[in-house]
Image (tube, rainbow, N blue to C red; front, side, top):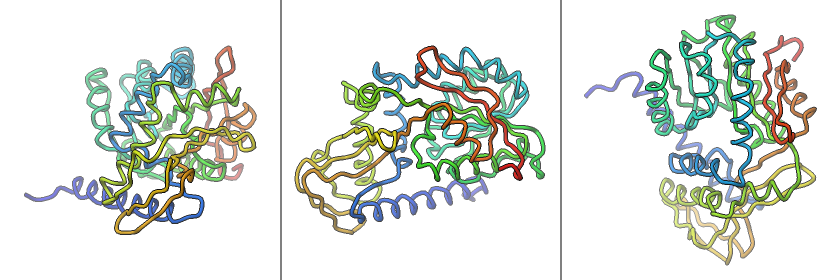
Length: 332
């Protein structure tokens, strides 16, 4: 059977991701301070487990952001336009997207995600819920500029003015310079005059933060440990998963939660034919979750090429939802 251009593109992306995964894991495990980028936590299983995390009693961000979206989506649409194509970065299950699309059910929706299988299932559900919605999924790494379908972004980038959507405070996973680079990539992806609706978590009492990333039921631990299972499956690894435990720490100096996988005994294993050793208590740093003050949020957006137009928060000041617009490159 002949391979369609779309199949060929998808196959090329999968090979590219596989190479990047192998490179990141091998180089991360070879370092003195071992680390693996957080994006590799989100294979199909990891994405499913993360959706369970969002329902944990301790995990306040999803509940708070959902309430903010219900309260302010109409305001967002009034500013960006009901016909603006919605481009979601790291769409996952697209559950929060439904709240936004209730106010713009006839527009075009472009979800971008690194996990195509999970995204396809979410798109099927959205198609049933919004039968007049045009859905054009794109499998890709949204931390880089992503080519959008031609009907979403004109060749000169001037119109239509898309609405980017980046909920979940996912930007907190990145170091400051990385976050600025990603915001710039989003700006280039969406084009001149585009809007960006983004959720960001606020700095608060460390005990609440640690509980949110180390829930009593152990769902976050399962999510973190799944990375080792993925390495064993996809990179012919022999990591003894039961010799590791999930660890969530608060780094006061850098205002972030850090997730680690800690060896509970000395271990030896191989990944892709390369041997590694880890001592008791040594960790693999898997994720950062930075927390921001309101001023830091707006400054970060400005550094990435975005001017904040609206900034909403809950009454307890736990979380922020910001609507920003791409500003002229000269100002950036």
